[in-house]
Length: 340
Image (cartoon, rainbow, N blue to C red; front, side, top):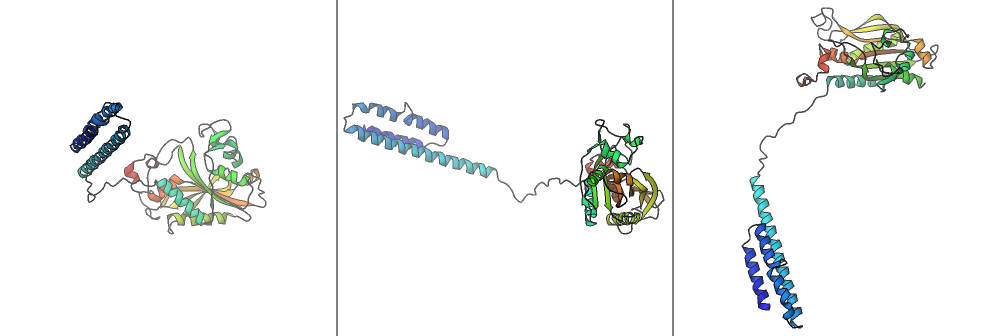
């Protein structure tokens, strides 16, 4: 039996030397080490040996099995290494070739204008405060001194969610929320989306962005309002820009005014963009906070006064960048957005 085991070892190792793929290795393994393999058959015939020979032959058979299994493992590793090397050689990456440059997005001009506005006001000492886009009728109309027959309260002008909830028509309700907190003095701005039933044209959209400013303190006057707006306009558009105040009427301010700025294209000289007037479109509305608004928020108008002004961020963006049509801001045309 010893001669059989040594012969099997030699034959198996010689066969393994000829193996070039895993399939042939598995065939050789089954032939010699499988359940019906040659080594197994030899071990089954050990019953004919004497008690002294069995341990010796058993030990020898196990050693031969271990040698063959180790050889199989070594050959498999060599084959795997050769295959990997072949694969790497066939997949050469030329790092000298120019790579594909991914398209890089741009910040939307509306967002740029909003962040620049907030930055300007923060430098002027204002706090930036946000509020919900769904508002109560009380905050959106009642506490802003809007009479019950005011056109803006009609369902044809405002998006009503229920009898008591609306999509805010302005960012002024954030001012109401801050004033009701009772922490004085107040110096704040708030920016965000607002909603109205507006027909879409060159300067109007049913969804637009607005920013409102509020200052409440002792001794605040119309002169403070005018100076703040002049400073803000020069910070945003440049020191050569001028402002023009026109009397107006808003239910939440008294007195009230609308503000125009000089045309940024011709700088007030008159051109086709401003129809020869030297003035751009209306930039914002402003005024002194109405005493009724202060009372509704628990502030004594005999002690405190304040001013407020609000503007469409979309309109500021159009003036700043010379954009003639508000539709361009919402069409998401990449060719347009790449200019900013």
